[in-house]
Amino acid sequence: MPILNSIASWLMKKRMHQIELFMKYPVDVQMEWMYSLIRDASNTHYGISNNFSEIENYEQFKSTVPLNDYESLKSLIERTRRGEQNLLWHSEIKWFAKSSGTTDKSKFLPVSQESLDGCHYNAGRDMITLQCNNNPETQLFTGKNLALGGSLKEDQFGDYNSFHGDVSAIIIQNLPMWAEFFRAPEVDIALMDEWESKLEKIAVSMMNENVVSLAGVPSWMLVLLKRILHKKNVSTINEVWPNLEVYFHGGVSFTPYKDQFLKIFDNSKINFMQLYNASEGFFGIQDQLKSEDMLLMLDYGIFYEFLDIKDLSSLDSHKKVINLDLVKIGVDYSMIITTNAGLWRYQLGDVIRFTSTNPYRFVISGRTKQHINVFGEELMVHNTEAAIAAACEKTHAMVKDYTVAPVFMKNNSGAHEWLIEFEKDPNNFDFFVSILDENLKKQNSDYEAKRYNDFVLHFPHVKKMPENSFYRWLKANNKMGGQYKVPRLSNDRKILEEILQLNNEK
Image (tube, rainbow, N blue to C red; front, top):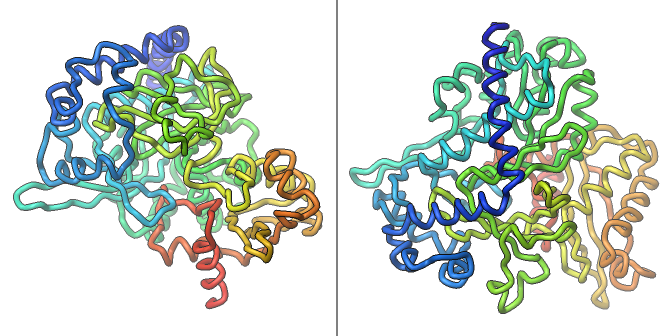
């Protein structure tokens, strides 16, 4: 195994030359991908309908191809699921990633072989490449990577069969042999549908293995790790897997969970590497150990565009979309993607903010549909995450989960109601809430203005929730799985009231 580790590490590091090339020539690489995607799909139904063969530059692409969301592409995606091909993409598509976001509507995003090979598998390789580059003494190839994945289901439409499930499950089902050799647990366990039974089987099968890396959503990974600690009757993961060296995480902000992982790992040598992967594609990887922003991966068969979120509701918003060349540091952008699976100028719903343009690094700052703007406060997830982190630091608390919704009062005023489940209670709850409010003001000038003298927005209402309150809501709503997450911010009280009701019924 040491020889294998040395050879594999050397091969992975060779990829760094290609990464350095797109870091040096980012716009050139992106424009090459735009032309390549248009050329490959020029004879598809969508390409013919939108005159792909006549597009010669970005301005023509921007003016010819409309901005899309899931609803505008849904009919073509559904026809593809039922066996029609060459509609959005030129190669056969039979895999569909079921979106596991925070809304009630399921989305089925196409996954082509090109996106599996060129995007998802390349991203898996690059995760390892960057870990090897940052850690010359890595031993990643001497053990197993434990990955929390979802499940798959087969759909039969007459004589045609297609498949849908979590994108992680689609990746596991189709992994190349070299990647499968290092992955765990076994496929029949990894793709189990019933989540609680799956966690139990993973814990039993992996607690005595040599695990060197972990990959999965933080909230569910914590559930698994705590189960393993209980079974092994130990207090830290270092006692279970002494060779564990990196945790690849994504799906939700890591900020509320980081202190819990530091405590449960109790090993300063373990690296945390953030990923930006979604049902639609894989977009970013943390490439520096001392900075949590991510490198925008520019050669995965995805063409990126951006729209300042301040222009989202503008009547001429389509004219204000820009390509990578024009983005600015510190602006919140809605991300628009064109992919090698047939998503054309697709509004992803994610909001990012660039921290650097040489190379292009960014942080995820929220969701276009997950914020609170009932009273003009324009509160976004990155504001609440930073405020919680500050309050936890001051009161030695650990937050497990939370959600926020508006409270409506008389005279057009209101407040924000917070439901928070603590892993570790603050040493002074009232002080925690006060620090939370003060840091929200620091993070967001609109919130600060609305809080002035309680004229529009009153002091936040914060409820401390019993253990597993959010877990019960996920279970009751059939959202048990590695990619499901609790909505952080809502403009209505539906989710918050459901959580409160479940807690009252307990």
